[in-house]
Length: 71
Image (cartoon, rainbow, N blue to C red; front, top):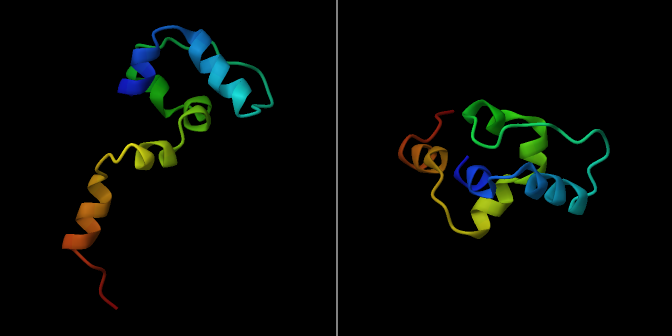
C-alpha cells in the first residue's frame, strides 16, 4: 500500500499496467484509499516478487519458520 500511495497519481499505475501488458480496461482508482490495494489491477502492477527483490520481511514466512506444520 505504501508504494501504491507514493505514486500519488493514477498515471503511474496505468504506466505500470501497460508495461506489464495489461489487457483490459484501465481502472479509475483513488491512490490514497486502503481498499484499492486489494484490487486485481494493483496486484498485477506490483507483484509480490517485487517485494522479495527489495528484501522486505514477510510475516507469513517468519510464522512458518516458528510453527512448522505437523504430519
